[in-house]
Image (cartoon, rainbow, N blue to C red; front, side, top):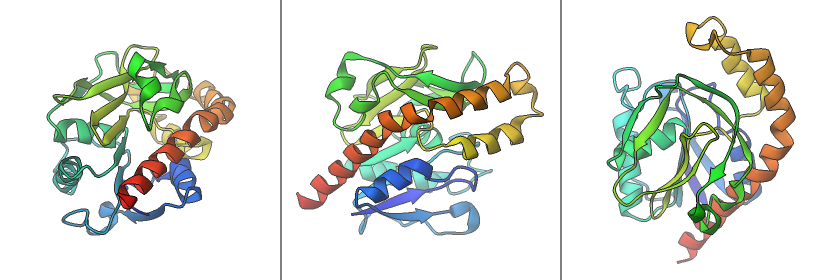
Length: 238
């Protein structure tokens, strides 16, 4: 199984999600357009698409000129029933690509370990069900404020913000960062430490929380990666 992975910046790698997918037999074709990698025009030759996070806005096309191509790949995936998973920025890109809206969170930046508060449909979802009730790291300014037509919200976090969604029959979005371990999150904390946007945040306490939650995050999200791998396998065999 071949999965096209779009990585938007060095500090937002596939991380643990990539490791779990590889353990499940998925070959990751990681493209880093910020470093000059070309994105394919379509998804022929790939069984699925994974779009990772990044600090840019989902419409920051001048900052990240590859974003229009990513949004088009997501639309192509949805139209072709190609399994797709968007993480944080990837979730936001998928939402706007399919007709939804993303705005700056009026509550301010969301930072910390939050809980997946599942809606009734989450327990029946073929990919995200295992995340119900589990923790996940969030580190984001923007949120999806309107889902695409036909999309299903599957979970909020304990602040009431949309956290998980099925954006199309084979497109899933996760606002959190199940892929990010303590090393990755520490890098984000160091980069943001002087920003007024996090002046109210006790970053050392957040990092301690991330470290303590890692076993529970693994327990909740490794099965999600395994479920996504099964969806890729089912499509390949169809």
